[in-house]
Amino acid sequence: MKKLVWLLSAIIGLLLIVIIIKTIAFKSMQTDPGNISLPVFGDESADRLSRAISFPTISYEPGAPIDTAAFGGYHKFLSEAYPLLHSKLKKEIFSSFSLLYTWEGRNKSLKPVILMAHMDVVPAGETGSWTKPPFSGENDGTYIWGRGTLDDKAAMISILEAVEKLLSENYQPERTVYLAFGHDEEISGLKGAAVIAAALKERGVEAEFVIDEGYAVTIGMVPLIDKPVALIGTSEKGYLSVSMTVEMEGGHSAYPAAESAIIVLNRALKNIVDNPMKAKISRPVDDFIRYIGPEMPFYARAIFANKWLFKGVILKIYAGGSNSNALVRTTTAPTIFNAGFKDNVVPTKAEAVVNFRILPGETSNDVIEHLKKVIADNRVVIKELEGRKEPAPDSPINVPGFDVIHKTIRQVYPEALVAPTMMIAASDSRKYTGVSSNIYNFAPIMVTSEDLARTHGLNERNKIEDYKRGIGFFYQLIKNCDN
Ligand SMILES: [Zn+2]
Image 1: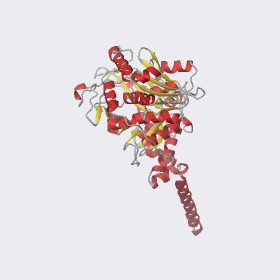
Image 2 (image 1 turned 135 degrees about the horizontal axis):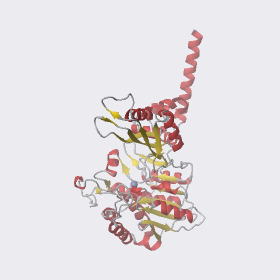
Image 3 (image 1 turned 180 degrees about the vertical axis):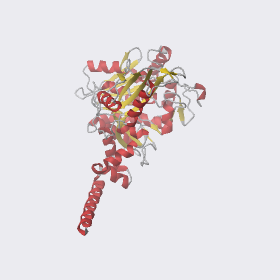
Image 4 (image 1 turned 60 degrees about the horizontal axis):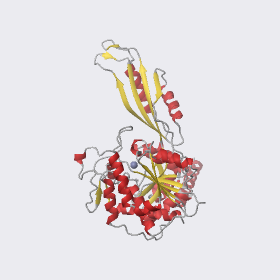
């Protein structure tokens, strides 16, 4: 007995030593920001964002008519506001309104880089409920207000401002820089980004990296971290919707059978919600842990540094919140349910639609196989709906493209930490997978969760000071690409 106690304490002691050593060895991945000096971007830069916001370049529904006056006016504004850019860069127009600018580099042997953004915005919703009119671009001295000030005209205008500034300093990049601006991102990007990407691919363009919206410098959004965290998306979840239909005999509700279409479908739905796909730490989330774990308080650091022991705990922590749960598994969301038409008739048909967001490393086939297994009832007919997207391939983080973005963020936002992670939402950038294997999602805006709600909601606005830093980000990024 005494021996057993001794043995047990020895094992626990050893375990503790290993945990502590691993925690100490769990070193910060943040680069040293060093010292850089950025130009000062004045009030004219803010005025140009205000002007850009005043064009209601709205994407309504796919196939709905385009407000050609708004998009045309926006194009005209751009050519007037950025004269150097328009005289020195090659401009091409795709599908009437999407724009591709080519800034030739000096060294043709270097791979080009692609800076992306989109010029369309979602509708303003309840226009009357906005504090400032959504297409006023009003500058109140602290904020610029309006649809697009965060998503995504801020990024587009910041890129143009940065290039115009560099041109005014007679800067010519070593490697070619493409500026690619779609006009239909909010409704699929099939006419904009997809067409530009296809043209670049056909020309044999192979980019060192592509950067597009998706994540930002987040404030107070990463648990246990006080500092702002700049998240860089390195992969995107997939998308799948399936319909589930049950057809059975109906009848009078006074003599109901033990089962009906509604009962069977309801049971199937309960089964799939109660038995979701397994939680997993995929590569992008593993990368996130490696970058953010070392910055956490000691007890949390000890958990994340010892994944070999605490994997179950980590998965439990993630699965506990609906936002973090989406990072560790393919999510299941019933979105439509239709059955019945009269209170005293048992309907013969019930139908539901379930939407899945597929974790990288899994496929839509895996999801359907899983569904069939947990439903285990062939009266439920499963049909895949249009719009499937497999998860985007993971972009590596041990390549110069990632390093240059990481370094630039640390230089421009030295108070912020950098961490790669997975994209839950979709962006235009996945259409560029044929042009580069290094696609990153980061826009230089600073957001709290309250700001995020504004992006497709009411009262979207951007702090002028933050917007100017965003210009500095692109200015420095282009320079860093040459070092
Ligand atoms: Zn956007």
